[in-house]
Length: 245
Ligand SMILES: Cc1cc2nc3c(=O)[nH]c(=O)nc-3n(C[C@H](O)[C@H](O)[C@H](O)COP(=O)(O)OP(=O)(O)OC[C@H]3O[C@@H](n4cnc5c(N)ncnc54)[C@H](O)[C@@H]3O)c2cc1C
Image 1 (cartoon, rainbow, N blue to C red):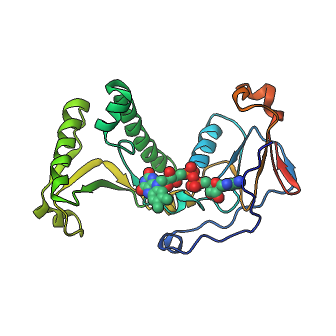
Image 2: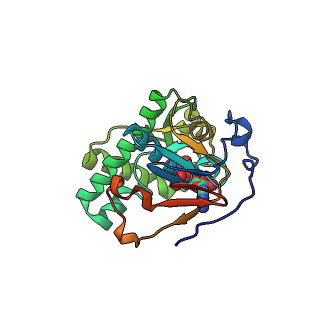
Image 3: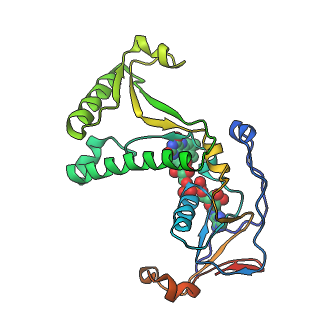
C-alpha cells in the first residue's frame, strides 16, 4: 500500500493576480461515501484533467479527485505559455537522443500546441488565447545563439514560424527593455492559464474536490494490468470514510 500526501484542510486558491482575475467555478462536491468508476484520476491539474477528458471521450466513466481545488497546483499558477519544443534546445536534445528521436520530440510538441488550441476551440474556453512568443537575448552573446537556433530549426526541422527581432525593434512588439535581440515564434501561444484550467464548462466528467487521497494498491507497479474490465475492482482511492473504486 502506498500513501500519498494527506491534508484534510480545505483551502482557497492562494492569493495571486490570476486567482483574483479568473472566473472561478464554485467548489465541486466533496467525495461522499463509496463510488464505483472506470477510472479515478488523482489530481485536477492539466495532467489529470487532460487524462480525464480524453478517457471520457473514449467512453470511460471518470472521477477526478483533488485534495484542494481544481487547478490548485502548478496548473493554476503557471505563465500560460503554450510553447513549441521541449525544455531544452533541439541541438541539446539531438546530442542526448539522436536527430531522429529529437525530430520526433519536436513534432510531439507541435501536436501538443495544436491539441491545446483544438480543445480551446472545441469547448469555447474563454482564456484569452494569443499568438507569438518572444525569446529574449539577455546578454549580447545570446543574440547569436538565437539566430543560430532560427537557422537550425528552419533548415533541419523545416520550421518556418520564427523570425529574428533586432534590439531596436523589440519595443514595437513588447514593453520589455534592455534586451539584445529576440526570437519571435509565431507557432507559440499564450493563454490566461487560470481561465484555461478553471473553466471546464461542458466537459462531462465528474470532479470532486477537497479530497485527501490515500492510494491503495494490491499489486506490484510492474504488474499494472492493462485490461480494465477484468481488473477494475482491484484499484481503490480511499479518503477518510469515503472511497472511489
Ligand atoms: C511558476 C510556474 C510557471 C510555469 N509556466 C509554465 C508555462 O508558461 N508553460 C508551461 O507549459 N508550463 C509552465 N509551467 C509548468 C506547468 O505549470 C506544469 O508542468 C503543469 O501545470 C503540471 O500539471 P500537473 O497536472 O501535472 O500538476 P499540478 O497542476 O500541480 O496538479 C496536481 C494536482 O494534484 C493535486 N494533488 C496532489 N496530491 C494529491 C493527493 N494526494 N490527493 C489528491 N490530490 C492531490 C493537487 O492539489 C493539484 O491540484 C510552470 C510552472 C510553474 C510552477
